[in-house]
Image (cartoon, rainbow, N blue to C red):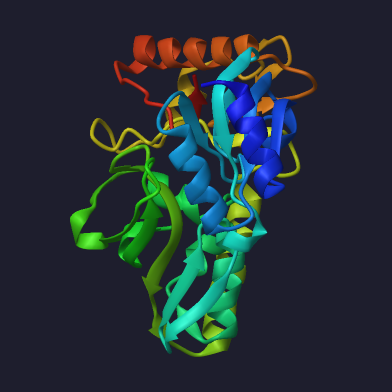
Length: 302
């Protein structure tokens, strides 16, 4: 579509729209080129009007907290949409039921549940990323996934139509859900269980210790690179990588964390090609050694 249309929209709504913006700073890998259009809608009305204007006339990617995405180094020839803090709300629908905005972090949702004596959200305390991102990939850890707590999600389609989808209409998979990819998640309704706050807090702290003991922090990484191949073996992805790949392998500044073999790291200024080469190398080595096909958990944005 013509950039002039977007510029006119920006002026009309005083919108936070940016052109050819560097997207490195918006993802945890700190890798990527520029985005032709980068839009941070301040409210639902602005988002609806933008979608009607854009009208599927180009690529579109919804960016959460950027914790599990890998961008190419060239220009993303489309629109990246990142919801503003106004989509970051939390409220109780019932004593045991929470509505969370999709821009809210999973950790913040877990803390809100604790403050209100609602259990079942402790696992989210350990997951980086937004509620919207967690919904998109059915996030989970320590035996619990989003699908176990979700009642419904509220979303908007590429034409600006608002929809509510109950969880029983969603096909959940391991680290994935089957829905129209052009849907933008606005909020979600979750149900937990009323419980003792001390018990909730103790479990949150216990899970956080487990995570900190096994996973690196304060580094440039996308988290778990590959899904656990649960349909092929009982072994975890990190175990397969550890037994198949030399520990000190690197491609430029792209390397494997010594603390967790399934965490790939940008140790300085890695390019997309370097990180992607490491991914493909590991995938081939695991296949050659074990016969197991590894599938990505992170999303490569084309």
